[in-house]
Amino acid sequence: MFIQKRRFTDLRSSILLCLASGQKTINQISNETQINWKTVERHLVHLIGKGWAREVFSSAYVRVFELTAFGKDYLRKNVSKNVQISDYKIIKINGEDAS
Image (tube, rainbow, N blue to C red; front, side, top):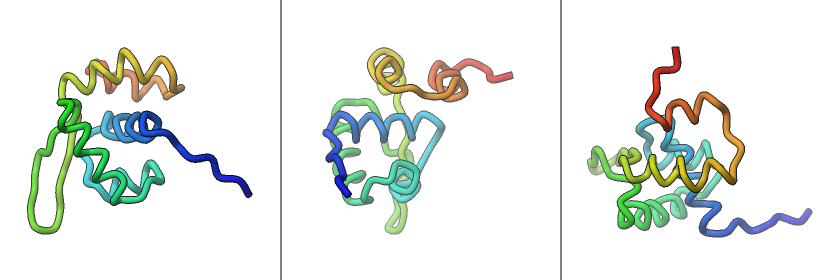
């Protein structure tokens, strides 16, 4: 079986899309995106440096992350055009009320 390697942009887009639904830990992101937790952690460092994500809470056992306004804007402009995502996620990204 051939497994195609994902590019950095694909991994980071997956992480951003995962964070679009709310605050997540590294393990939650890893489980939802099927990306190794160590890889998620390394890409989160890049996303934090770009200002697209931020660390909300940190302890010795858990770290919680969320999208920033810049991350939501980047996701809306660049990622959602290339990736098909549900209307519900787009509504959450845009900050509109789902009801």
